[in-house]
Image (tube, rainbow, N blue to C red; front, side, top):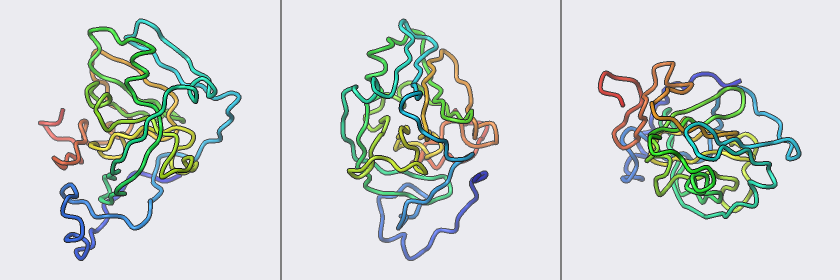
Length: 206
């Protein structure tokens, strides 16, 4: 088990190397493994992905059905709240809008909660979940995701800190009202926008 993220000192010599980084971040030379809980097993015969909440058509997709959805490739960075950034990732996966096409969220839907293995969750406004960079990723840089990085499926939301990019994703719940996820309950920012450096909760957080 890897516990609550801790602050990491930023190497000053790397700041000038990446002027486009969000404030307080440094470029990582390797993809650090950081998560809550143990790496879960994956059985493609029993795995399922659930879509529910404020939708016209709740759904449960097998791995075979999910793998048959249209796939897109996107490039984007991954920014951890512990201050490292994994830059220029090439992701392959399913556009979140495809899930909306399947389930048809109701007009009053404004938020989603992403549900991972082991009871982990993270909340997002609907517009962030449907933003141009977001993805349900199955591959990274031309290869299937490795188990420690969220295989078989993880969320990718590049403009939010990486705890919102839920590993081992198993479902999406559509809501009218916001509901904090796992790390938000421990004082992390509800919004987690990386370019505004929203790491921890404040009275203005939202």
